[in-house]
Image (cartoon, rainbow over all chains, first blue to last red; front, side, top):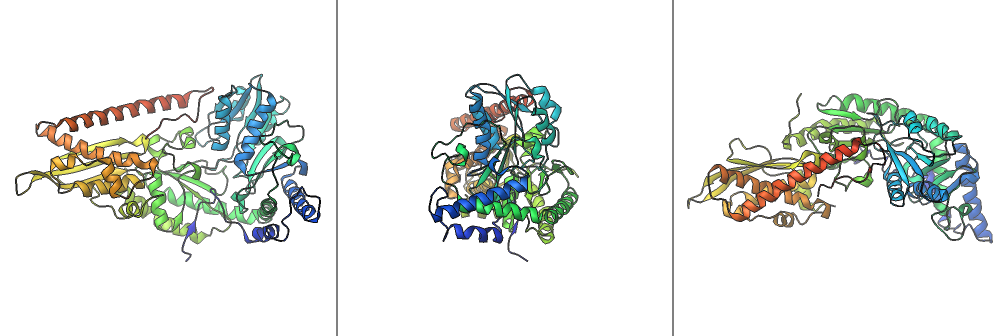
Length: 384
Length: 174
């Protein structure tokens, strides 16, 4: 039995060995700056452009539509703030209440500059109603931003329907596809802007990209040497970009096998965990990302549950890793109407390509007793 | 993030559960905020005829720090006279645990508050004269809890609002 079980793959994933192997030469022998004229530079440029083509092909976009960034937070900010800057001040953005903080806080900040925003409500599984997007559109709406799949509860959003609605109205559609990339089909033809990150799919940390479809006007956030078609100045992260492309190729090659296993494990988790009294599934049992499952446990607090499981050698999280130090209940769970008394007791389990049935067994073996231990400490009792 | 002492108390908490017989209970915190602590005390006379906390226990809904501070405050209070127990502060609790992360400091406050409230309830029930410091702290604690509930009401109302509502401006529990 392995010492530790890692079930926090939506926080980050280990770099796959094939990805690391692809990256290593670009730290060592091939260390050139992709902007240099000499042979070192030409090799770095070749590696960056080959990687760009390989990612573009996997997504079904043109290679000059991929803008590499430092990660998805930057990509979300470039899409949201960059389109607001291109709009030239004011205007209106439509987004949802369940977005990742990177998108939500970018919109929040824009509001302080005079941009208006609508935060759409979601239903009890966290899904945005595409018709509500249409209803919220105003004459001055310039951007709609709705994520592809939720990072806390896994719910898939109708991005195809929403994106097609924006077409022909002169409204840009952005989607944060960080958790969805490599896991589910993405209706890319309906999207103008799409954010992704390498470290969520067994690539390295510190590299992401934004798809910017042709004709989409953005003002860059970084000014400098004019890299990435002027949209993201800064020397390219050559090993990171090469690693990202290798990770995307890997995800594509093994997608069916890996996501079938994930779906099977998710069904098992849902069946078994819901047998523990005072437990609820947060999210959609079916229309979900395959790797994310979120539960709430009455009468206990999520952080102590994560800590107890960690003592058992099992790594999980309460929601998004970014919000762990935050004392407030998750904005996603509040948005889907989880009673506040249960919103604090959430547990996110996220599987990866290396997760096995034995890992899930180990979690299921200890979870009832760990929940029982914490409930024994709690002043609140759970009715059978 | 947490000191070894915190983790040790979380792993093997002392004095956990409800006392079979208790003289009073202090209830503090708010489930909406993620921390609720109920602290039970049993008061008895020692050989010199002084009132001492013969037994102390707790039930807590909360994070690692909330559970560790519950355990620690029960250790600190057990066996003390009422006069001594009243002086146990949140800083004492945090210091004995080797410190807490800044964002979790309120947990030590909760533990000291629960003790304060248990002693307050006991002295009130017994018709004792309430020391000024105990009374002052009691009023402060009750006021804080009322404010918190009020803030959450606003939070929930805002959650139902449709347009241009701020999703990030949530109430703070600290």
